[in-house]
Image (cartoon, rainbow, N blue to C red; front, side, top):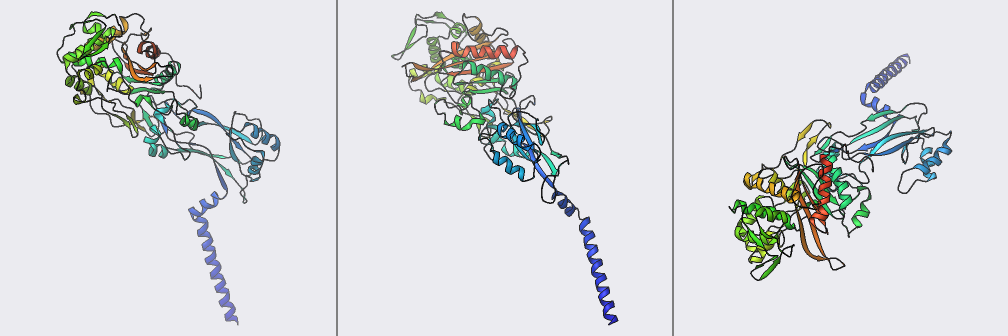
Length: 549
C-alpha cells in the first residue's frame, strides 16, 4: 500500500512539474503574448489615404479636401445631447438615425462618424481633421481620373498607376484598451497608430498653379473645349484642362449628362483645326524653297478646278507677301501656296510636326492620332485646297496643336509631350520615369525662326487682337474651322482656336486653346490665351484651390 502511495505521489509531482513547465513556455511565447494583448485592444480606423498624386513641384493634387471625423466614446453621462448633436451634424448622404447611433453606443466600443463641422462641444467626442481624396471641383479631374467604391482606379492616373497607389495607401488608426467583454475602458487614452497621410505616389509634370489658372480662365470663357499648356523648352505638360469638367464626388450626375458630355477629355480628342494649320503650310513652303517674299494678289476668292474658295475678307486683301498673308490669314494665298508646295511635301511636313500620330501619356491616357490624309486621299485639287487652310479631311487634338506650336519654338524639332515626371516613396525624392523619345528634326531652325516672327506679327501688328496679352509679349495664330454642322437656329457650328507662345523674345510656355461652337478664334479663344499668358507671367501668388474654393 505504501509503495502505491509513493508511486501516485511521484506521478502527481511529475505531472505538476510538466504542467508548470508548459505554462511557463506559454507565457514566454511572443506570439501568444501578442495575441493576448490584441484581445484587449480594439483598433479603429480614423482615415485611410490612397497613394498621393503630385504636381511637378511636389504639391499634392489629391487628398486635399478637409473633412472632420468624429470619434465617439460610449459614455453614459451627457449622451442624450451628444446623440442629438450627431444626428444633426453627421455628414452622410442619407443622414444617420438616432436608433443607429444608440445601437453603436450600446456595443461599448468607440466608433467613427463624419461631421459637417469641427465641433468639440460634447464629452465623449473627439474630432480629427482628415482629408477626402477629391475636391468637389477637383483640380485636373480629367487627368487624375477617379476610383470606384472599392478604391480601384477607373480612369486617368488613378487607373494607370492603380497598383502603385494601392501599395502606397496608409491608415491612421486609434488603438483602444477594452475589457474582457470587449467594452471600452473609460479613462484609458487611445494609442495612435500608422501614418496620418500618404507621402508615396506619382509625380506629374503638371504645375498646379498654371493648371488652376487655365481652369479658372476656361470656366469663365469656354462652355465646351480644352486648354493645353506645354513647357516651351521640354514639352512637359504644365496644364491640361477640358470643359465642361466634372466632379469625382458626383459621378452619376456627370455620367448621365450626355448633352454636354463632361466626362470626355477634349484635350485628347480630334477636331478640325482651321487656320492654325497655316503654320504647317507656311513651314512646308519655306522648306520647299519658296521665298517669304512670294506674292499673290487676293481678290476675295480663288477658283480651283471649277470650285470657288472665298476669302473671309470678301473684298480681297490685295497683293500680299507670305508674312502679310499669315498675319491677315488669307485663305486664297495659302491655297495657291499649297499648289506650289505639292500635296506630298505638305503632308510630310505635317507628319514630321506630329500630326496624324497618337500621343501616349500613360496607360489608358492617349491623345488621338487625329486625321492626316494620305496623298492618295486627295485626288482633286480642291481637296488640297481645303487642307491648306485646315479644313477637309484634316483633324488634330489640342495636345497635337500645342506640340505643333512647340516645334516652332524649339527650333524646328518635334518633341513628344509628356505627363509623368516619375514616382516617389517619400514625397521628396523623385525616381524619374522613362522619358519620351528624343526630338525629331522636322524643319530647319531658320524656318522655325521665320514662323515665330510671323506669329508675333499676327498678334501684335493687327488691331483688335483679343489674344494680345497686357503684361507680357507673345506670338500666336488663330483659327476658325467650319464643321458642316448647324445649331437649332440654322447657324453653322465653328471650332475656334488659338495657338501661341509667351513671352515672344524667349518663350517659356506654349498654349493651345479650343472653343467648340465659338464665334471665331480671335473673339472666343483669344481672351482665354490672353488671360493665361497674363496670369502666368504676372508672377501672382495664385495657388491651387483649397477645399472647394
